[in-house]
Image 1: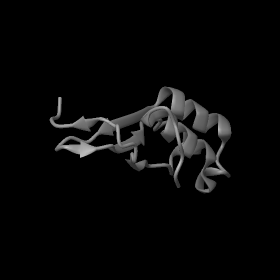
Image 2: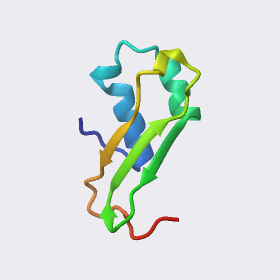
Image 3: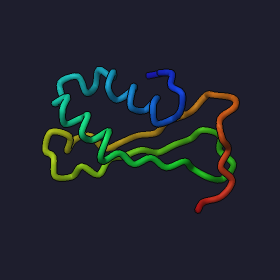
Length: 85
């Protein structure tokens, strides 16, 4: 799906909240996961706006089947990451 946001975190949160794939999941568990357990990594090697995300809310059975995914940022002014830190 495609969403808009002021930054990659806002866009990811919106996408997770609005996706049909998660509409039957416990909303409180999803919100907890977004606010407390979300992990996002900007890939290096000169990529513009390629991000990987996952969560670490491993003890919550309500979100145990959510693994993460890839974000492709289409903002032309988005950051380019040249090296890993």
